[in-house]
Image 1: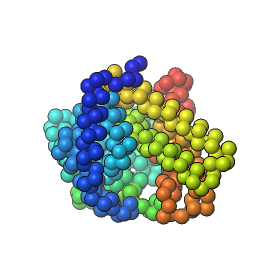
Image 2: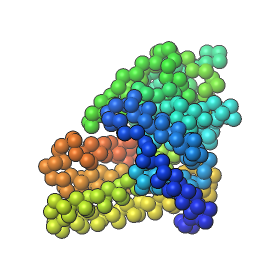
Image 3: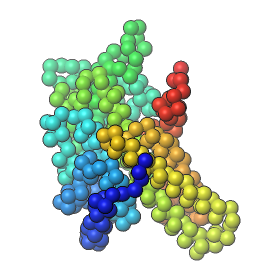
Image 4: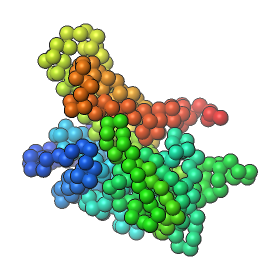
Length: 383
């Protein structure tokens, strides 16, 4: 496995660095983290700059290695993250690029790349979170449309989204006599968020933000042409979505965590907590953890490049390890800050609160362990 970059890839890195150096000083001030309409405008403005410079499609049309270089360099330079464009750029967009028709790619991908349209993720339900295949939101075919009724929860960026990547049940309800596996009968739809019958109610997180929402669907009509993949084949399409979510979507955050470790060490030296040998060992171990995670990222990218660009089950190894390491990192940050770790106005405090969700987001750690056990180690499926 070759983890090194080619000459062409290093040239890409150099051009990107030069562009970032020239562009970042001219960006407007960042909006309030709790102002999601403001953040949408800011994030989409950044995406438009990437589009105009020729970097917008790096998540789809570039090689996995170039994608990795892009995420690494933008994070190191302190460039804006994808923010409100997260689902469109890193989940729905790659899925449509891999599974959509030519017409679907032409309709949905350019607006995402230009920052014109924002997507949200409508997967989880009150009774189908970790057990996603138990979802019950129903879609009934009526001529050239599906009529959708149900409820979604933890819908990322729903309050500012134009489109939703929506999972619905088009086959028999699971558990009924003669019904197929609950993984069958699921369909992946692109639903317009302004369609009649869509109601969005924001959910406030522990950190006070509202990037999640409940979405209620009351006989919402979604054109059949908005179906990605075949009817009842949505679980397979969903696995493509989740492979991107777990395999490459957190790459930039690994770079951010490595940078944070350096900031923690400098802060510890200033406030005297560096004298604590236990804390120094803790930071040293975390440094080794994130170096290892970066190597896992490189290995996953190499695998994706060799297999057509879709990350494999190794993404679950990364996600499982990363989510726990991130929580440990911010616990170490709290130890460095001491009582100031309770001040919501201090750096890292809100990030620490956010880190608590990482062992749940994008598939719980329990689910990731099952995937690793079954798909990598070849152990029997649980009952």
